[in-house]
Amino acid sequence: FNIQNEIKNIIKEETFRLFYQPIYSTQTETIVGFEALIRWPEMDEMFTPDEFIPVAEECGLISELGKWIISTAVQQVALWRENFKLSLTIAVNISPVQLQDKNLLPHLIDTVKKNGVPSDSITLEITETALFKDSEKITETLRQLSQHGFKIALDDFGMGYSSIAHLIEYPIDIVKLDRSMQSFVDDGCKRYKVLESLAYMLNKLDLTIVAEGIETESQSSLCKQLNLDYKQGFLLSRPLPVDQIDAMLASPS
Ligand code: G
Ligand code: G
Ligand code: MN
Ligand code: NA
Image 1 (cartoon, rainbow, N blue to C red):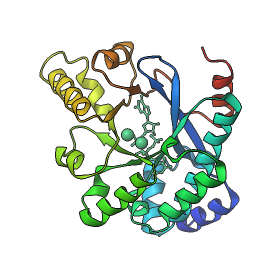
Image 2 (image 1 turned 90 degrees about the horizontal axis):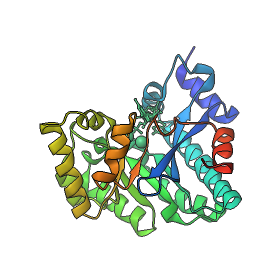
Image 3 (image 1 turned 90 degrees about the vertical axis):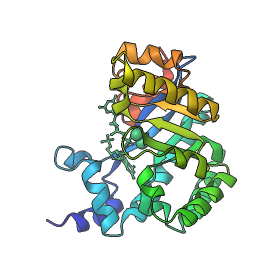
Image 4 (image 1 turned 30 degrees about the vertical axis):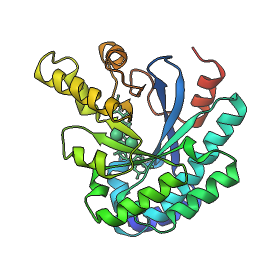
């Protein structure tokens, strides 16, 4: 069994699936868009994306896999926009290796054109690890993506290696607060004040804020109080296959 060959084959056989996790407006509590998350159904218990994405990166298959992810996700959101007459957005996770691929921008431009969706309905989620590499080159790449209208989201922003300098240095539109920060909500003291101040600062910088990992009602209602624009998490909806999202959009509760 060779995971490298497996990945190569399954890109061809389309054994991967994308699941979609709804992202909600804090103000209206309605779905504004989705985050695409890859799944390998046959291997669900054995390999999670945490495990096979790094393998795909190491063996140089992430660009091919990444292309498939982008094409599939954009095509899907185009369908939903058309079928439900909603200006839905789609967020796609972009690995650091993929961000350095020269073909990323041309492929994105080609994909939005083919599917007739505006580029500002596409969000590229990048992690801070991508920003530590070659900052000049990354700045240029992000600048070009921005110039073409694509939205850049900084994923997993929180306590880890997060740097405020990144918010100043790079053309970032959206900040996704890491789900570990949800534990700050119920803390009531120092941690909560950090979250409150961070929300204040991000709003001052005119960044769009997404709260991730919403699992409790108190976390969900606090989003409004802190002026967080959007929210996402298991309480609201898990990542779901296409047919279940279809049903959800057909009968919004
Ligand atoms: O969906 P889940 O929580 O299992 O994802 C685990 C990790 O894998 C997360 O860090 C997520 O960002 C990453 N991941 C999920 N889907 C994709 C994808 O399509 N592309 C990339 N690059 N990473 C993904
Ligand atoms: O790194 P990134 O933020 O892209 O990872 C997204 C992952 O977070 C997905 O695999 C998704 O399954 C997971 N996720 C989404 N909402 C929640 C949540 O409310 N709680 C937890 N524990 N994980 C979540
Ligand atoms: Mn993400
Ligand atoms: Na995240």
